[in-house]
Length: 152
Image (tube, rainbow, N blue to C red; front, side):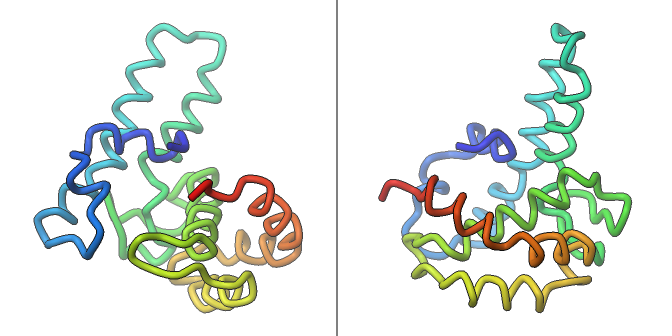
């Protein structure tokens, strides 16, 4: 489990491993993983004076990677530049990975399909500048995704 989703350790396996769609109540529980991850990482700050800035970035990523540029998401409804930059970057990278990966609930998308979806969500879900940076260096995303493809 990537660090940005560390809060999923607090989500019951029955929800994490569910084959079909989540109920409204299950989705509410799943959405708590962002705040749970943020809390776990904040607890580590106490004993880690040397790496505080790295941990602060990790806390921002864990707590805000499901926020949308337009303010329409969770857990706080942050918008625009109020969302930490590392979280805005992780949001796009996490979405790209989800789109191009096969999941129990969906088939993998092609790189081109994922790029089109990310472009469609520019200024809605994603920071327009982050989308432009992604598009300029999208070949690196293909390379990384192939190197670290989920073992399924």
